[in-house]
Image 1 (cartoon, rainbow, N blue to C red):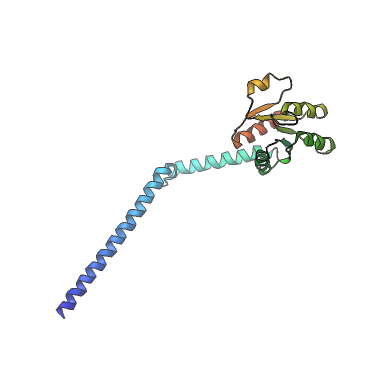
Image 2: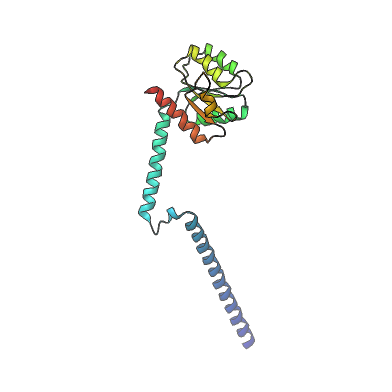
Amino acid sequence: MQLLLILGCGWLVLFVFSLAMAAANNRYAVETTGADFQFSNPALDLAEEPNGVRETVANRLQTIISSRSSRRSHAGETIYVVDDDPDILNLIKEVLVAEGFDVHPFTNPEEALEDLAHTDSRPRMLLTDFCMQEMNGLDLISKVRSTRPDIKSIVISGVVDQDLINQMPEKSDRFLSKPFAISNLVSTLNETLAEANN
């Protein structure tokens, strides 16, 4: 009987010890996770700086709202996008459609001219690659402006730079060098359209 009692007590001690170890491990894991989170996200430390977090979140939300308001002011504008690289063309199209623009994409500048000659829409912007097989982007802009002189234009290129573009007789309103950030494309487009309204 005493032997059973000793074994039972030993088992109970081991059980309590294992529970204590599990709790300690769990606490260590939680503390480690919390420390990592605070280290990688100091702005979200609610316990120490609740007012700072609220201000940060409010400022970010206001920035997003302002950004979306400025973008939406041009929503529905028709934009012709011409690039003989289908992958780049599709990327630009998806981004601009998400921004609310009516995008007409073309891999061939001649097709863009043909569509422009027969459309009832009034495109406000021509976004074109510079180096294409049929004609370069500035030649395309020149032909488009012969019938739509008020159209705004942006030339994009990974081959030529701004200085070379500036030396050419035909001018575009803006130039973007490839590779470009999507945010830079959107802001440049919106700024160019805003200038057209002033």
